[in-house]
View 1 (tube, chains in turn purple, blue):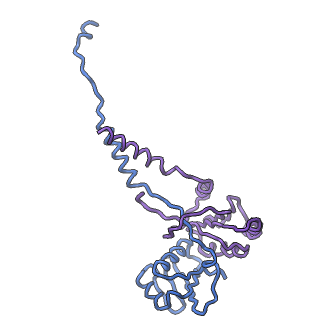
View 2: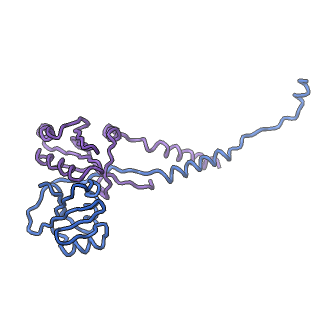
View 3: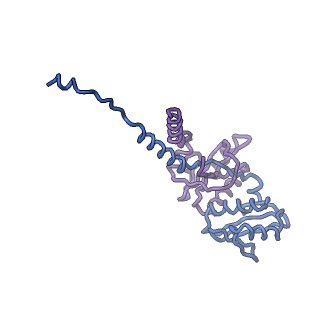
Length: 128
Length: 131
C-alpha cells in the first residue's frame, strides 16, 4: 500500500507544479496586456524568432514588449531587419481583434520587407 | 494520585491514514480532470500567405460573419459545415488560389478558423488579402 501512496503523492505534486514550469518574458508580457491568442489546428511547434510583435485588444502595438506607434512601426521593423541576413518575425495578435487590424499589421510588415512571418496560435487539449 | 495515574493501562493511539489518502486521491482526480495543456503553435505566413498570386483561377473569398459565412460574389455558404465547404471547394477546384478577405466586424480568431477549415478540406493555396 505504501508504494502506491508514494506514487500518488508524486503524481499530485507533479500536476500541482507542472503548469508553472516554463514561463518566458513574452509569456509574462502576454498576461500583463491580457493577450488571448487565437486557437488553430496547426501542429507546427513555435520556433525562435528575432523579434515579436504584439497586437493587443485595444489595438496597441508592441515590438519586443516596447510600445510602438503604428506610424513608426515600418521604420522600426526596417531598422531591425536590415541588420540581419535572415529576419524572422512572430506576430502575436489577440484573437478578439478585428481581422482587418491584423491584416493592417501584416501589410506594414510586408512593406518593411519582412517575408518570414509567423502568426502565433495555440492548441488547447484537456487531457495531458 | 500520581501513582494511580501511572498505573493506568496504556492504550496505543495511532493516527488513521485513510482520510488523508482519500483527500489525496480526490485532489489527484481533480487535477487530472481539470488540467488543460496549452501548446504554443505557429502559423507560418511566409510568401504563400502574404503574397497574392496573380493567377487566372484566383477565387476571392469574403468572410462575412463570425460564425463563418463566406461568399465569393455569387454563392454564399456556411464554412463550418464541412460537407458544404468541401462541395463548394470541389466545384471551384482545390488547386485554385483562394484570397481571403474579411468584413470589419470579423475577428482574427474567425479568420484563423476559416484558414484551418479550408486546409482541412483540401485547399492548399490560401492567401490573406493584403492589397
